[in-house]
Image (cartoon, rainbow, N blue to C red):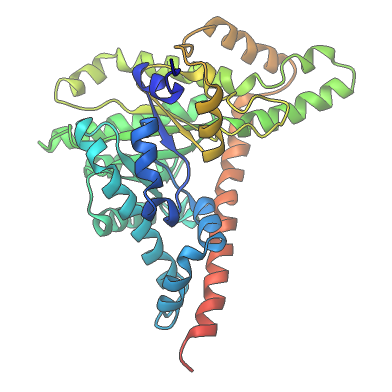
Length: 374
């Protein structure tokens, strides 16, 4: 008897699996459709880094780049039609999932320009423009959860635009994201608009937390602090479990119940940055412990394949919550402030998306100049 696909078991446990990757070949070859059917794949997330690798690393884009470059006045006039075509195509493939789940899954995320992370008004304007251009109900606009991004989230939710709040690393910021999202729903309700047509996720990044914290723990261990070594690889999972506790507290509040009574959807936590960066860790390190209802895990292809092969799904997210508190306290005793870690990672995260975005635009500008009519 063939063992069930672990990815499908995740679905039965209340967790949706999205793919943290997109490129044209998988859209036109039928591979993505096969993954939807075989693995229960329920959405896609993208970012500037993913598109930089896809467009510069696959020949599928050459014809479009050449065609657009001959008439474009800027690299953006090449970049945007290519990206919007892929995002729109993927959204069309996921539309049946969106309809079957009554608007809870089947989403495809596209990010506003990372250069706008510190400008609320420009973020809103860009998000609205992308939303209107793509004109599909199962699009999610990714907005960085920076201080300037929070009011943008509120305004976009109030306008009925699905939002993926990205680059979350800390519990304080996550609480602020929940407040912005709730306020957006309340603004919408006060305007007499429906709440059941807008959805949102809060993308909590994991492996990057451990990378930074582990570096500090290793330095402490080398200086003779033996307990530090035992905490390697524990920070991200502890933060995720505590974020889920905050999620539960918010959704049991009267404030939320009033909105739910009007048809509002929960803002699910989405586990992001789920590939294990340290080769000493299991490739499914950021999947197995974080399985729980009303969550999403977005997996890069390698992690998705690894979980299909070796996953052991069970509802573990709410296990060891007291230990999560202990872990945070022990890290603090060692001088590791996870809120300070989160602030550093947020700043670095924006830069890590700006760099590949600019690199891709520079490459496309070079092609544009080569192919533009003299």
